[in-house]
Amino acid sequence: MKAKGVKRILIDNIAFCIIGVIFVFLTFVTRTLTVYGNLLWTPSFLLKSVFVSLVTGILIGFIINYLFNIAEAYLNTRIFLSPKGLPKIEDETENSTGRVLSNTYKKIQPNSGVLIAVFVGSLILIFLSYIPYFLAYFPGILAYDSYIQIGQIFANEYNEHHPLFHTLMIKGALSLGEKIFHSLNAGAAIYVLDQMFLLSAVFAYGIYCLFKRGFRIFSVLTLLLLMLFPFNGFLAVSVTKDVPFSAFFLLFVIALTELVFDENNKINLNSILLCLSVIMCVLFRNNGKYAFAFTILVTLIILLSKIVKKSNPDNKDKKKKEVKKYATILVMIMASLIVSAIALTIISKSLNAVQGDRREMLSVPIQQLARTYVYHAGAGVKSEDDNTMDEASKALINEFLLYDSAKLYRQDISDPVKRNTNTWVVVNKTSEFAKVYLGLFAKYPGDYFNAFFAQNAGFLDIGDKSHAYVNDPDEIRGHGYVQTKWEDSLYERGFYQNTQWAALREKLDTFADTNAYLQIPVIKYIFMPGIYLWIYVFAFVYAIKKKRAGMAAIISLIAGYYATMFFGPTVQLRYVFPVMITLPFIIPYIFKENETDNG
Image (tube, rainbow, N blue to C red; front, top):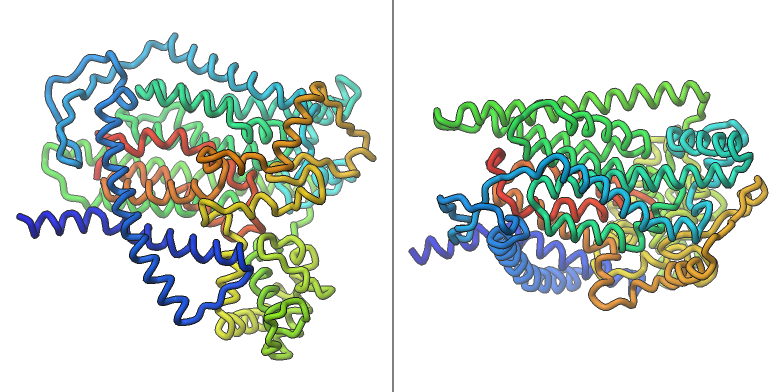
């Protein structure tokens, strides 16, 4: 019995321990790079770091697994997941910890009037909570890439580098503002108000779904978080593609969650919302389609596992329903991706848009080659430069990274080097480029790893602060973790900042520019991107361990999206925003058994 008990404990914890080891190792690596700027992958370092990671990571794995189990046992026996006051079912069920859950509750749907009131009330409250930001930054925050898109609109020359659909959305709002109010500022305000409404409506629908499923406490807490979390307010009034993308990203997760937990297995509103959200995610972000690749893979694996899984005669109908459910979800996602591809082609051709430069997709190779160059090419930038790189590799790098731009290398952001990248080399000298790239990797693997980990420190280290200083707010006001600075070209075209609440604007600017959230004990971690990755990773492992296929499918989109971020130019709030706002809507389902989808 004791041997079986030990074996069960090891099996129960092994996945968490593996993730714990990886977590500690990556935290140590990224923290070292952030503090010291370089890391030598010597045998002694590897032995020491692996040993520390094993000891500490295994302990962390055990602790987190224990906390997840305790959380599930507690939440399912309290009002959080089982609403207080609902009548109990007489029979008792046993959970994974061996505890008997005596207060399981009957499923009582609130009447439609209550649900409509929840949706409308949440929408109004959330929308109103963003009004102060709108007044402070009136007509909105035209930062990030908005000035480039507005430049395309004025020139009537479009480039696919930024999502064309979003550019057209801006154009429509500006045209409406000029037509009705004879003001570009009014057009910008119309865009921002539309975006605020979209974000509020999706949030409200998520709260509606939580409330409908009985997560009453969670729905209230989520509502308060969405209203009070300052970054939601900043981005709600920022003209950037990342906000509507985030809204539809969240809508996909909500719709998929509803379909997975739906007992009726019928085509309904959530089916329509799922298809719509896939299409819009692709239209609002050029790499949006790649985020769904992992979702398709996980859903396909779940579908195949349910097809081959043996079931007793009493469960045949249930098995058929589950197979049909995941087959339908898979078909809807794939069909929506096809529709979005067609839509993108039509939009591009109608605007005679020029194909965008693909250098954004090369952010990681650009960083790896630039880092290797400044450490091994005799560039005179780093004191550690050993000048051991061969001349042929130097020549190709200088052809690829023009104007000695490799010397501009910064380990936290690829933009300084990327701006001067000659992608012609990759397209027309593919074999030569691949030979040099792979050859340098074989010779200097440590520099390639350092470039990747340093650039993604904000994602991998839950305590990382370097991501908040990527745009150097000390030198340029408005370039903090949240960007608020307008480019001069906007003023030249007739836009102007016209704050309606100057005192609040000053306080918000100070908060953003000084990255004040980093000074808030404990609470600061909900502002930091790294914490979200690891919560999702451990939640995914927990879902697999519990054989909750649906939860694994839901989290898979987040995994796919992280894959696109890891190969992006840097760590910024607007990139992390989709996974930040999605987490509150997933938490209750992590700990809830799905009676229609187990196994």
